[in-house]
Length: 362
Image 1: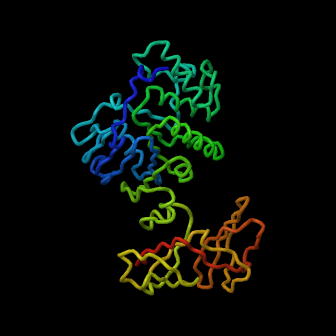
Image 2: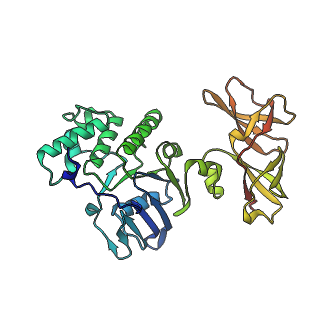
């Protein structure tokens, strides 16, 4: 099929496909989004990640054109689609949307669902586009089936194909896997990332599940109380969190007391660490050190002992919660053939490559 028959928008070289500039949104007298700014380049997959009520879906809806913003602006492919007092109609924004509940039409078959948004396209081109997308999402020959005859994962693929059919400038996905079981969610997330990358689609995902975010997105924005706390890669969010909220929300870890000894050295109960001390901590003697489970290594030969307070079996590993002599707790990932009992003391040593330090909270 000739893509020009559905008027695929061409990206402008050097211009982000999506740009959100210092947007604010209010409900009544309450500000629910505060100074939101981020960009997505052509072909990039972004994610807004955060707990329920943090404002992430509100941001998505404002990009889609379903809600107005009170300040700032939103640009798609270099063109302003939202600012205070102006909102381009949703149907003119060239945005594809995949909803949490799929929103498939039960009285239409799969082919008719996928073709629903193809207006002004010949019957022949419409049929060709449907067949092309069924191949893309791995459901060739399924056009005559109805949604109720498909599994949840298949329905999600159909919803994706329908959103991609008009060749949108931007694809938005609102908690797209929340109704699926964990195993299917992880597998489908990887598959959808591959499809989006293959099609060079710019996409923005909203989720509360960091595993989904890590599996799909190139860049992730962590939100809390309407504020974007950090926009970064999954690696940097985990190893270089901007603040305590990000450190606590991303991955697993604990904070233990440390003493700023100067010169990038921090003394802890588990030993001395080399760390990049943030500017706001450099004049403080007492600091808090973030330790991840992979920073604490089980070592029978180590003189440092910790007591097993809890353990969670994860197949290849145990996640141990260990109590240090001071009473502070740390987490440790230990190969599952080391099956220690509750209350047992085991040897541990500190092996931290990325040391994150925060100011102590009073």
